[in-house]
Image 1 (cartoon, rainbow, N blue to C red):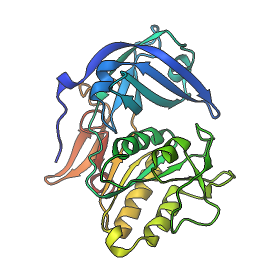
Image 2 (spheres, helix red, strand yellow; image 1 turned 90 degrees about the horizontal axis):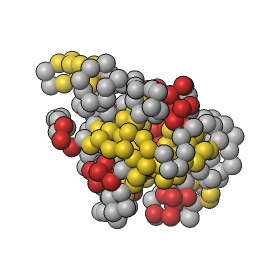
Image 3 (cartoon, helix red, strand yellow; image 1 turned 180 degrees about the horizontal axis):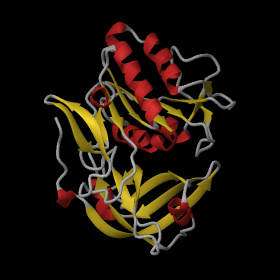
Image 4 (spheres, rainbow, N blue to C red; image 1 turned 120 degrees about the vertical axis):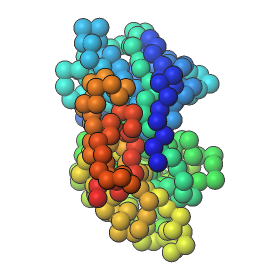
Length: 288
């Protein structure tokens, strides 16, 4: 069942750039002082940024972290075109017009959420993990990238049954939170699983006791082929799955319907807007 977003929950504010760091693979992490957005943000939501005063068309970027107490949000993005190139040139102390938080968040229901992020789909998984780190949930995170990871991986201090020998690299932030994490890539990287995120997830799922496996739900964000593979994995193990879709957007608030996708509903196929009806959907309704 969909939970329509209330328009008064979306804020428009001029957000100051607190920090802006570049990483290999044309990746950047941007921290914005956006207190109204930070106070409302939930994992899976995004912001719509004006990247430059000369470019009125905004860019949607997923929220990676949000601190309501200090009023900041973190965004990870990859420079891929003229808009993100302009964004990459913005510096500390400048302001960006920020519209958000927008969209339907992930709704974590299971005791053992398996969080799978690929490429620029990693940020929502980090946000979910942080929101669960002191809860009764027991998250497991698998991150994949064909570019260098936007962090320096390190050997995890958390042992995980079922994970192939030598696959020990993790995101330090998650490891510090006590959240189990492993990395996957087709590239040759030390301590990283050589293969797909779904292959590594299958190893972990197969190692669980039957009762524990029934407590798992899959949550994913990443490229379309990866999401389709995650839904097939969920179907293989008969597990629930939620996916966050990536789509080109114009208005970002549901007015233009340019980001609509076909979703299977109780009443048959329907066109729904990724920006406000999503970006998070039941995976089985999108990939059937």
